[in-house]
Length: 226
Image (cartoon, rainbow, N blue to C red; front, side):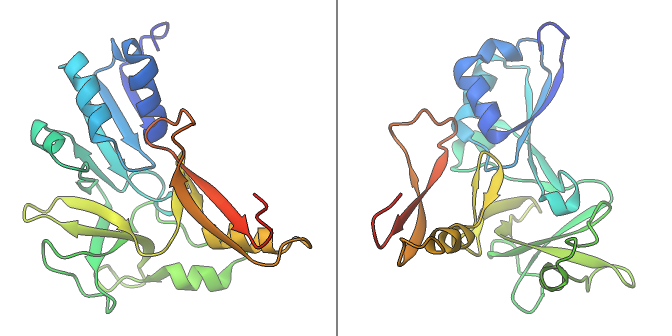
Protein backbone atom coordinates (compact mmCIF):
# COMPACT_ATOMS: atom_id res chain seq x y z
CA UNK A 1 0.00 0.00 0.00
CA UNK A 2 2.79 2.43 0.87
CA UNK A 3 4.96 1.37 -2.09
CA UNK A 4 2.22 1.92 -4.65
CA UNK A 5 0.59 4.95 -3.04
CA UNK A 6 -2.79 3.27 -2.50
CA UNK A 7 -5.45 5.86 -1.65
CA UNK A 8 -8.63 3.75 -1.76
CA UNK A 9 -9.22 0.28 -0.31
CA UNK A 10 -11.99 -2.28 -0.40
CA UNK A 11 -11.47 -4.99 2.20
CA UNK A 12 -13.39 -7.77 3.86
CA UNK A 13 -14.30 -6.80 7.41
CA UNK A 14 -11.89 -9.36 8.90
CA UNK A 15 -8.95 -8.06 6.85
CA UNK A 16 -9.90 -4.45 7.61
CA UNK A 17 -9.98 -5.25 11.33
CA UNK A 18 -6.65 -7.09 11.13
CA UNK A 19 -4.94 -4.13 9.48
CA UNK A 20 -6.38 -1.76 12.08
CA UNK A 21 -5.12 -4.02 14.89
CA UNK A 22 -1.71 -4.95 13.49
CA UNK A 23 -0.76 -2.44 10.78
CA UNK A 24 -2.60 0.84 11.38
CA UNK A 25 0.15 2.78 9.56
CA UNK A 26 -0.95 1.02 6.38
CA UNK A 27 -3.77 3.59 6.25
CA UNK A 28 -1.40 6.58 6.28
CA UNK A 29 -2.00 7.50 2.65
CA UNK A 30 -5.52 6.13 2.33
CA UNK A 31 -8.37 8.58 1.81
CA UNK A 32 -11.30 6.14 1.45
CA UNK A 33 -11.64 2.59 2.82
CA UNK A 34 -14.59 0.24 2.31
CA UNK A 35 -15.32 -2.66 4.60
CA UNK A 36 -17.80 -5.42 3.79
CA UNK A 37 -18.42 -9.14 3.46
CA UNK A 38 -19.25 -9.40 7.17
CA UNK A 39 -20.71 -7.06 9.75
CA UNK A 40 -18.49 -4.02 10.12
CA UNK A 41 -16.83 -3.46 13.48
CA UNK A 42 -17.77 -0.18 15.14
CA UNK A 43 -14.73 -0.40 17.42
CA UNK A 44 -12.25 -0.86 14.57
CA UNK A 45 -13.71 1.94 12.48
CA UNK A 46 -13.63 4.27 15.48
CA UNK A 47 -10.03 3.33 16.20
CA UNK A 48 -8.72 3.93 12.69
CA UNK A 49 -10.63 7.19 12.28
CA UNK A 50 -9.18 8.41 15.58
CA UNK A 51 -5.70 7.70 14.20
CA UNK A 52 -6.55 9.09 10.75
CA UNK A 53 -9.23 11.80 11.18
CA UNK A 54 -9.40 12.48 7.44
CA UNK A 55 -10.14 8.88 6.49
CA UNK A 56 -13.62 8.19 5.09
CA UNK A 57 -14.96 4.70 5.76
CA UNK A 58 -17.76 3.10 3.79
CA UNK A 59 -19.64 0.05 5.04
CA UNK A 60 -20.84 -1.99 2.07
CA UNK A 61 -23.40 -4.77 1.82
CA UNK A 62 -24.36 -7.16 -0.95
CA UNK A 63 -24.31 -10.89 -1.63
CA UNK A 64 -22.25 -12.36 -4.47
CA UNK A 65 -25.53 -12.93 -6.33
CA UNK A 66 -25.80 -9.18 -6.88
CA UNK A 67 -22.18 -8.68 -7.93
CA UNK A 68 -20.55 -6.75 -5.13
CA UNK A 69 -22.06 -4.00 -3.05
CA UNK A 70 -25.77 -3.41 -3.36
CA UNK A 71 -25.94 -0.84 -0.57
CA UNK A 72 -23.30 1.34 1.02
CA UNK A 73 -23.09 3.73 3.96
CA UNK A 74 -20.50 6.40 4.68
CA UNK A 75 -19.78 6.13 8.39
CA UNK A 76 -20.39 9.32 10.37
CA UNK A 77 -19.57 10.13 13.97
CA UNK A 78 -23.09 9.34 15.20
CA UNK A 79 -22.77 5.77 13.87
CA UNK A 80 -19.86 5.11 16.22
CA UNK A 81 -22.18 5.36 19.22
CA UNK A 82 -24.29 2.42 18.02
CA UNK A 83 -23.84 -1.31 18.38
CA UNK A 84 -23.56 -1.91 14.63
CA UNK A 85 -22.79 0.06 11.50
CA UNK A 86 -25.68 0.79 9.12
CA UNK A 87 -25.41 -0.75 5.64
CA UNK A 88 -26.89 2.31 3.98
CA UNK A 89 -28.85 2.87 0.80
CA UNK A 90 -28.89 1.12 -2.57
CA UNK A 91 -26.20 2.32 -4.97
CA UNK A 92 -26.94 3.42 -8.56
CA UNK A 93 -29.05 1.03 -10.64
CA UNK A 94 -29.58 -1.38 -7.73
CA UNK A 95 -32.47 -1.81 -5.31
CA UNK A 96 -32.89 -3.20 -1.80
CA UNK A 97 -36.22 -4.03 -0.18
CA UNK A 98 -37.22 -5.06 3.34
CA UNK A 99 -40.25 -7.32 2.96
CA UNK A 100 -42.52 -9.52 5.05
CA UNK A 101 -43.48 -13.13 4.28
CA UNK A 102 -46.06 -11.89 1.77
CA UNK A 103 -43.46 -9.78 -0.08
CA UNK A 104 -45.02 -6.59 1.25
CA UNK A 105 -42.76 -3.72 2.26
CA UNK A 106 -42.56 -3.40 6.05
CA UNK A 107 -42.78 -0.01 7.77
CA UNK A 108 -39.68 1.84 8.96
CA UNK A 109 -38.30 0.33 12.14
CA UNK A 110 -39.86 -3.10 11.54
CA UNK A 111 -37.61 -6.07 10.83
CA UNK A 112 -38.12 -7.99 7.61
CA UNK A 113 -36.11 -9.98 5.09
CA UNK A 114 -33.76 -8.16 2.72
CA UNK A 115 -34.27 -8.68 -1.02
CA UNK A 116 -31.97 -7.18 -3.66
CA UNK A 117 -32.56 -6.42 -7.32
CA UNK A 118 -31.32 -4.36 -10.23
CA UNK A 119 -28.12 -4.22 -12.27
CA UNK A 120 -25.70 -7.09 -11.80
CA UNK A 121 -28.20 -9.59 -10.42
CA UNK A 122 -27.20 -13.16 -11.28
CA UNK A 123 -29.41 -15.34 -13.48
CA UNK A 124 -29.35 -18.12 -10.89
CA UNK A 125 -27.21 -21.04 -9.77
CA UNK A 126 -25.61 -23.25 -12.42
CA UNK A 127 -27.31 -26.63 -12.62
CA UNK A 128 -29.39 -25.88 -9.48
CA UNK A 129 -32.89 -25.10 -10.82
CA UNK A 130 -34.61 -25.82 -7.51
CA UNK A 131 -32.37 -23.53 -5.50
CA UNK A 132 -32.58 -20.88 -8.23
CA UNK A 133 -36.39 -20.92 -8.10
CA UNK A 134 -36.31 -20.67 -4.31
CA UNK A 135 -33.96 -17.70 -4.15
CA UNK A 136 -34.57 -15.75 -7.37
CA UNK A 137 -38.21 -14.70 -7.38
CA UNK A 138 -40.38 -12.31 -9.37
CA UNK A 139 -39.88 -8.67 -8.39
CA UNK A 140 -43.32 -7.12 -7.75
CA UNK A 141 -41.71 -3.68 -7.56
CA UNK A 142 -39.61 -3.90 -10.74
CA UNK A 143 -40.32 -3.95 -14.43
CA UNK A 144 -41.85 -6.74 -16.46
CA UNK A 145 -39.90 -9.97 -16.07
CA UNK A 146 -37.51 -8.61 -13.46
CA UNK A 147 -36.48 -10.75 -10.53
CA UNK A 148 -35.11 -10.13 -7.07
CA UNK A 149 -32.87 -12.20 -4.84
CA UNK A 150 -33.96 -13.41 -1.43
CA UNK A 151 -30.86 -12.93 0.71
CA UNK A 152 -31.94 -14.65 3.92
CA UNK A 153 -30.64 -11.60 5.77
CA UNK A 154 -32.84 -9.64 8.15
CA UNK A 155 -32.88 -5.85 8.31
CA UNK A 156 -34.91 -2.77 9.01
CA UNK A 157 -35.17 0.68 7.50
CA UNK A 158 -34.61 3.71 9.67
CA UNK A 159 -36.97 6.65 9.34
CA UNK A 160 -34.39 8.37 7.10
CA UNK A 161 -34.34 5.41 4.70
CA UNK A 162 -30.98 4.01 5.80
CA UNK A 163 -30.88 0.21 6.01
CA UNK A 164 -29.63 -1.65 9.08
CA UNK A 165 -28.63 -5.32 9.11
CA UNK A 166 -30.04 -7.24 12.08
CA UNK A 167 -29.12 -10.90 11.49
CA UNK A 168 -30.04 -14.01 9.55
CA UNK A 169 -33.38 -15.67 8.91
CA UNK A 170 -31.62 -19.06 9.08
CA UNK A 171 -28.49 -20.46 10.74
CA UNK A 172 -26.02 -19.54 8.00
CA UNK A 173 -22.86 -17.89 9.32
CA UNK A 174 -19.91 -16.10 7.77
CA UNK A 175 -16.30 -16.88 8.57
CA UNK A 176 -13.77 -14.47 7.05
CA UNK A 177 -16.42 -13.46 4.55
CA UNK A 178 -17.20 -17.00 3.41
CA UNK A 179 -20.69 -18.42 3.82
CA UNK A 180 -20.92 -21.56 5.93
CA UNK A 181 -24.09 -23.63 6.16
CA UNK A 182 -23.95 -25.56 9.48
CA UNK A 183 -26.54 -28.04 8.18
CA UNK A 184 -24.31 -28.99 5.26
CA UNK A 185 -21.32 -29.45 7.57
CA UNK A 186 -23.38 -31.60 9.94
CA UNK A 187 -24.61 -33.75 7.06
CA UNK A 188 -21.06 -34.31 5.84
CA UNK A 189 -19.84 -35.29 9.32
CA UNK A 190 -22.83 -37.54 9.95
CA UNK A 191 -22.01 -39.36 6.72
CA UNK A 192 -18.85 -40.78 8.29
CA UNK A 193 -19.20 -44.41 9.29
CA UNK A 194 -18.07 -43.78 12.88
CA UNK A 195 -20.54 -40.94 13.52
CA UNK A 196 -24.10 -41.58 14.70
CA UNK A 197 -25.41 -38.02 14.99
CA UNK A 198 -23.88 -34.59 14.50
CA UNK A 199 -24.76 -30.98 15.22
CA UNK A 200 -22.79 -27.89 14.25
CA UNK A 201 -22.76 -24.68 16.26
CA UNK A 202 -20.70 -21.50 16.13
CA UNK A 203 -18.71 -20.10 19.00
CA UNK A 204 -16.07 -17.51 19.73
CA UNK A 205 -12.58 -18.94 20.18
CA UNK A 206 -10.89 -16.82 22.86
CA UNK A 207 -7.66 -18.79 22.56
CA UNK A 208 -7.25 -18.00 18.87
CA UNK A 209 -6.16 -14.63 17.48
CA UNK A 210 -9.20 -13.86 15.42
CA UNK A 211 -9.53 -10.39 13.91
CA UNK A 212 -12.98 -8.95 14.13
CA UNK A 213 -14.37 -11.53 16.55
CA UNK A 214 -14.03 -14.39 14.05
CA UNK A 215 -16.55 -17.12 14.66
CA UNK A 216 -15.42 -20.72 14.27
CA UNK A 217 -17.68 -23.63 13.47
CA UNK A 218 -17.49 -26.42 16.03
CA UNK A 219 -18.98 -29.84 15.35
CA UNK A 220 -19.98 -32.36 18.00
CA UNK A 221 -21.07 -35.84 17.10
CA UNK A 222 -22.48 -38.80 18.96
CA UNK A 223 -18.93 -40.07 19.44
CA UNK A 224 -17.56 -36.66 20.40
CA UNK A 225 -15.31 -36.50 17.35
CA UNK A 226 -14.33 -32.98 16.32
